[in-house]
Length: 437
Image 1: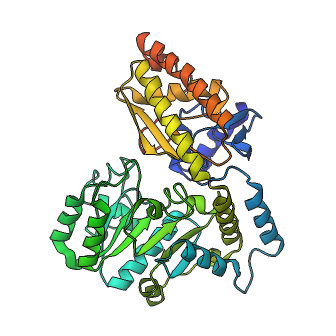
Image 2 (image 1 turned 180 degrees about the vertical axis):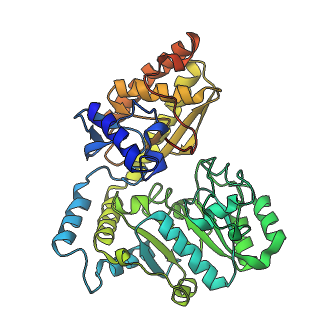
Image 3 (image 1 turned 60 degrees about the vertical axis):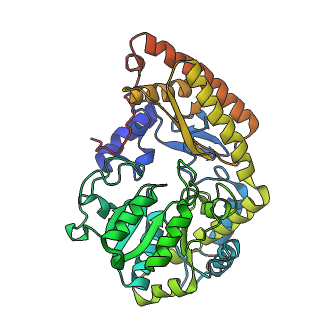
């Protein structure tokens, strides 16, 4: 991997932290082992800078490529859009068609706005909710990105968001004046939301939450959140950036909840890797976008909406969520069985389409890196995460689980002979955000 490692070294000199996305940093897997850069990707196969070929059973473009890499239906639509002109003094008709399709998939919604990334779209949704209510405070549950409105929850103490996905999210650079404007509560902990409301319900503008992450909602939780929103007049926003298009064509809330939100935000799987995001919602709330300034040149380009329309059409026809349920449940059951047979205290969770495991061991970071290393030796990109794509087939799952079987046995042997750290060719994996130098 001479070209890959040379490029990683050069990137450190030119790009702070090496990459634009924390989840793609090589040290999240095993630095000096993880290939880091790709030359080509197709279906579920990736080629690195040195021409090595891998089956990707890891993060699937961090959940963006729900159909698979370089999907022909989506790419053909994008190519046609490019040939007809990506940018123009006029607006592309695809954005109107996409608004229609999203509102048809979600009958509770009347209107849509578009951006190009999930964090942008969430910032738009929060701005609209604040404009609609005339209030400032946001109650948030789950992981919602890097924006000021979200990281403000950590201004009062650096642990407020630790239980939501990534510990160590520093709010450096977030204005101290935003302290108190965002407050976190944990999924399935309705009492924590009630405590936020009790502190000052008159200032609550929005409740922003993921419909599901590692756990399904307990009975009465979502209904209770909806009741709080109704009582306080706050806008209930479902962050569907990760969960959307994993359970059905559209938001996970359609499959999991009888309760409907006031707004929902989509990105990642919406465009199968192309940059597009959407905010949908009730007309009376969405119209508040006209009371504030929300505008961007690149939100009007043609590629994102064209990709989203093609992706939704392909998803509706192929129904990959049915495959995700079958494959994901098989993978999770196999992880648990392999781990326990090899003497590991396993925790397995996550959506079937985006599963994960961890080992209850003080040196889990070394075990994770050794897992990555052994799977690379089998020609498979893998971590303790497994994000499924429609491009995956039964043979891929068979190959992956056979490699996992060998790898868990090697991990058990390493544990008995001094620990996995002694066998690492790279460095232990990071479990959370840390500065990279």
